Length: 301
Image 1 (cartoon, rainbow, N blue to C red):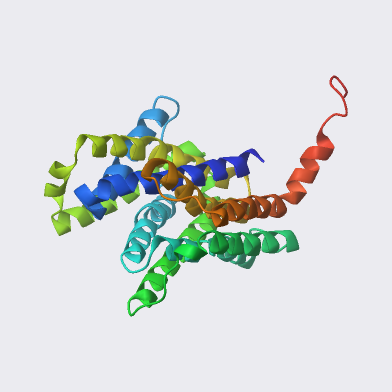
Image 2 (cartoon, rainbow, N blue to C red):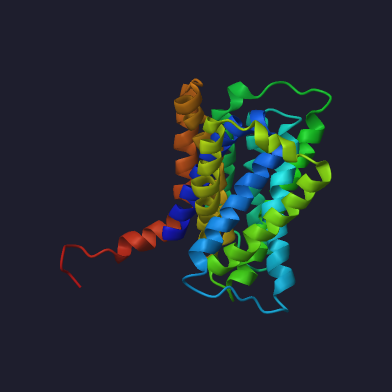
């Protein structure tokens, strides 16, 4: 249950990172903002891990660990960003909410976990809950809509593959070690893209409020968010972790209301209840064991 809660907190912080990103992108642009977030998260992760344990990865495992970092911390954000260039955030969030079902399918395909009725029902309920919550914000299709859907579907696939494949690396390496290799790998790849595009001048356009948002992105929206997600994958099944991603768009909508003055509708409230219900449903077996394991009274054996 701690792993599920860590995934939920990670996804909620990820929603707040979307709001913070909206402060920085108009000033710095998309790629420089992503680079600042991932580079800062890399520095913080290394600073936290190095004093506590050596970061050692066997040469035969390095391609897998680095490759996973490129998938989750370079390819995934690129797909996600390209999608938002063609479709509204609400529609993108709805497509992204299919990730729990794809993660479960991939995990079952490779024998990582098995299909259960509660997991499938939880994924479907979460998808419908997000769709209902954001239904009033999804506009009609246009000539570019299919491109945005394809890009976001690429994000769904890359995220699902990472959720399942990372379990093989996390069998050998602790979450802190894995995060300290994977996140910098993604940051280096993004830096190379920024160098090719020549977007360095954009950093001079960031205002003081923008730098405060960048600081939040690197700390809570970056290092903490990424580590919690990896730690959750280390301690529970991929489908249970992936289901928490449906909290991301809902939390972003609520935080957008607090920070940006956007409206909170009754649909958002119902959607949040639905997502929480989906998380409870998918983890019902774990919750039932936890409840049955509690002592009947204080001091009982």
